[in-house]
Length: 343
Image 1 (cartoon, rainbow, N blue to C red):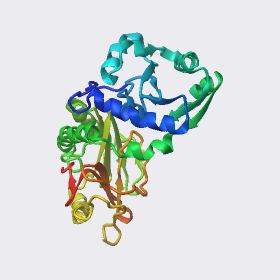
Image 2 (image 1 turned 90 degrees about the horizontal axis):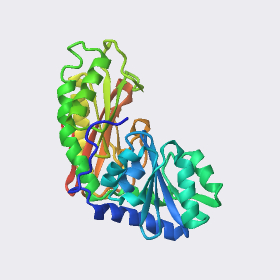
Image 3 (image 1 turned 30 degrees about the vertical axis):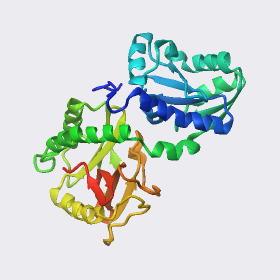
């Protein structure tokens, strides 16, 4: 279950902005000639559902059905007592929400059958469950993935998303800095250091956290309850008001300083329109992730496309031969990138 601050900041993400996001999906629905689209999310991964519908289930799961005009209907796998919260997060009326508990797939299929009869349905969500697809298809629907069609739309987040992430960075970076201070010299176990980071970030308002430890080979795992036998990397993936951000640091300040030097020499060259980055230093690599997601711990780099002004992204700097890795949230500006997680 997620914890922490579970509200929606309507000043950053008003109802009109959520509707504008749904209209992007509605345009895809019309392009494909579909009756509607389904967006799925659960406690582990709700990136598309959170962004397009404002709902990130803090336990169980949910589906939002979006019609060709941007209207929506939410089927919640949570209990009816939290329908008020679902309405508050999504901006939906209470009569646009159905609480289905463990019968999410059945309830979704029933709603679609009664509303649309059958036909083509768009599907959005990297981890859309087979059980729900089968239930819907049994009612006479044919599912088509809209993930690729929505990829660029979902990558180019609006100002509400970017502003929320910047606000989260300001809260979380102080918590990470305080908890990580002396992680090497003070002989805390890796588990204790990770727990201190999680506790500090939860207190600062994190909805969810993924805290991992990395060894000399940059293999990451759950932090063990033992003292490190040398420098190690702490990887913190944090969620604030539905937006994910990441920061990674080595326990050895000297190794961080080397990585910072490689990072800082690169920042001025990361400008709007940039499509690839290189540190220009032997043995050092750099990569940009344009959209940090719930599954970012599994991200292994790659082509990110052109960046744009005002975008928030993550910048990873690593030296595989020496086992050094740092990662920061950055802001893309006309004159270069600014490091947001400056700790």
